[in-house]
Image (cartoon, rainbow, N blue to C red; front, top):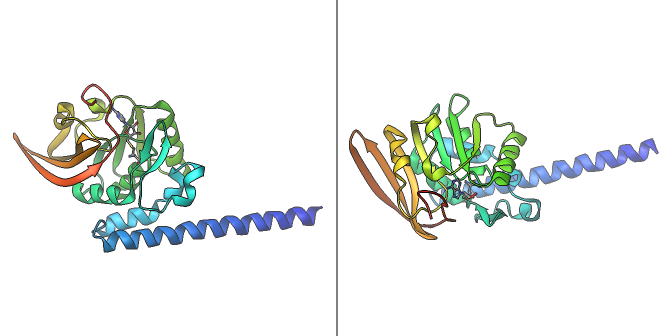
Length: 233
Ligand code: SAH
């Protein structure tokens, strides 16, 4: 009996090792593809992608699609963003070690995990989610891979997060009808805001604040779930 249990434990350990290795290979292939497509451009973004297991941020029924470059359902009609979009957004913001970042739309917590790896231990990430159950899952997902520099908050992110402002960068992972004024107010002088503007099919806009000057750059078309709230839909 004891021998049988030992054999089963060994089999299970081998199986887990095999699955883990399979995901790791898929992750490396996805990173290779994103580099080839020039979505990942810098070493720090590449490293963050290699260190973040996307399979830990998606529900069990879609785990086998974790490394397909597409959004996936995470519940409440919401999605985890496609990896190429996460890469584009990280590169556009030029996020650096030690920065304080605000994300609007925690969803699964995956994008926040990538950003937390880029800012490193001395950096901080705050992420606001309107659905309590998604915020709880995001928190658990982040904890499951040992991330401690991300704070998940339940609330209306269209109003930003005044209590920890100002931020080096703010990015929004849902589409807004217009740029919410509190988000511009809550970035530092010299800071950046990245936000999809429009309904479903929208334009990714990069806003840079320098003194009283606001520069807006159109980074092209994209598709996101809606920002629902006071300054959203
Ligand atoms: N960054 C996420 C993608 C989430 S999809 C990830 O990596 O998985 C966008 C998320 O924005 C959804 O979870 C949605 O519930 C949330 N959202 C929409 N409007 C919001 C608002 N006003 N405040 C906070 N979160 C909002």
